[in-house]
Length: 129
Image 1 (tube, rainbow, N blue to C red):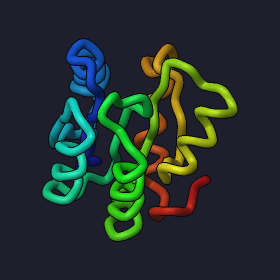
Image 2 (image 1 turned 45 degrees about the vertical axis):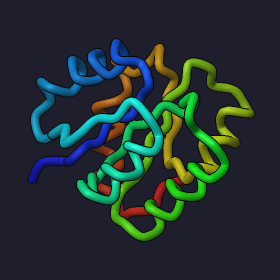
Image 3 (image 1 turned 90 degrees about the vertical axis):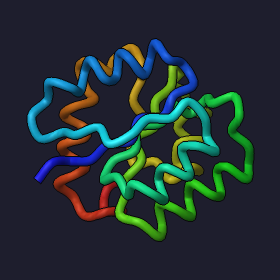
């Protein structure tokens, strides 16, 4: 069974790179993409992806957005991989607040993303911190 993935980033070029990284990966199926938080929340509810790969620094993200994302993660079977250009203590705290099970540096996505998706998909939701 394919691992379903939703991609979320405000940058069309990053979304294109994510597609390039994952399109050739056996067993990983991109079911949707979004350039904004409100649309992403709607797609999470409609598509029920196994994995959500989401930029933490979305310009339209608010505290309300964070609550909606966490609510979705609690009620569904999705796991969130947060991505960021800056991976520091603040980014790690923010990722945990969002409910992310992993934080990946965007500069390391080529090496880490597909294997992280597979690892998380093999685990029960909420079992990895």
